[in-house]
Length: 318
Ligand code: PMV
Image (cartoon, rainbow, N blue to C red; front, side, top):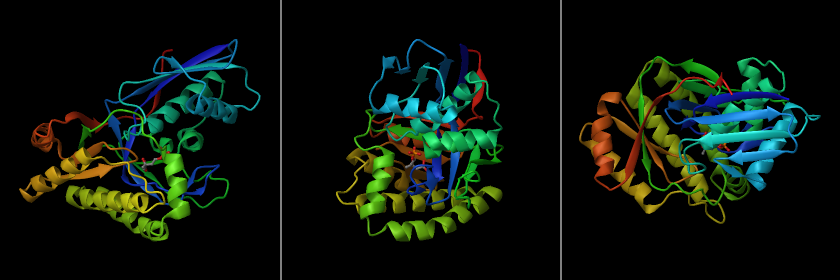
């Protein structure tokens, strides 16, 4: 029996991954760029060798789909593994568009491989984390991260790669709702791919947006980065809303925040919105503009969390 533990921060996509060219390997149809954010943290402990398999998520023992997904991931680490005990806790809302699966599978990849006595480099850990949840491959690294498409059919070249962690950005998360969403991103992507007439155009356009984001990051141009982030967000949501039946991840208060940030920008504040497969809105801005953004959202009666670039996933004492 061996025990290992790890922490990881979630990441928020600036240019989105939405659609898979291989649903088993979680190979993306679109390249993406993200920011790993602190202080939100997932903490995961894996006991390799237990009486029976058990998965405890945020204090509740889970035998449903979420628990099964964790156990299937352990089978990838070692198909001949012993029964295992996994405990994982998030200090932020789970499955509510705050990228909890990204930190979950990044932390699990580190903890499980170490508990199993394996030693993987970060690229290999990122490939493994991607199998649990695509976006998790980006949370292996801190700061700004690029996840290119890759070319290999086995997916070994499709993993996160660090861009820069020396740009002090801020993200203000507006917590519109903190309950778990009805449709997972996995199911949402499948429905979009199968039914949205906009999906092909989305996939065709994404590489240009990714290149624009990489150029903006290289030049430390926040306006260019914010602009392409919003474009990627709204194009992704157009594919969701044009799915059949439509995927409606956003709620009326999400739009109130979007309009409020547009008004701030018209008044000269550099702030841009992004939303994922959930109603919460994340606002990208310079750290000096955080108080103005927080006040504007608080004025709507909506709670906020201030997020800053987070570090890479790492092992901790169990
Ligand atoms: O990898 P998943 O299943 O967590 O999907 C992530 C999808 C989005 O959050 C909407 C976009 C992204 O790139 O993170």
